[in-house]
Image (cartoon, rainbow, N blue to C red; front, side):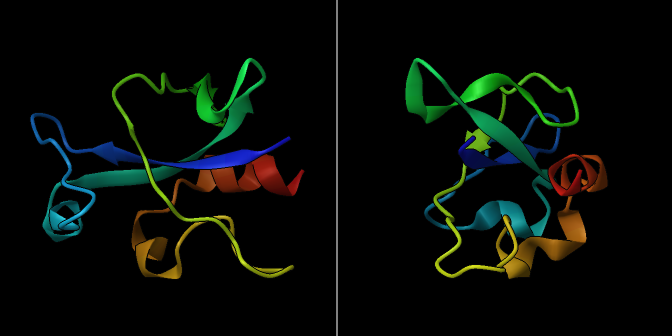
Length: 89
């Protein structure tokens, strides 16, 4: 199963992933979703914690070495602990 990192913006805020403006107040959480089996570059319809992925933005992060976190280290404060726990099971 491929994992896709998703950014959940604060209500009413559109993240600017290129400018990283969501890090300064527009970021609610960082989630993980399985890749869609029919379109592997896209997330499935639900995150691993069960939230709808439609309003979330795909993050470009991918681990580059074995043992690295599934999420970017600089986004640790916004980590969805339910998604993290689902990945550890």
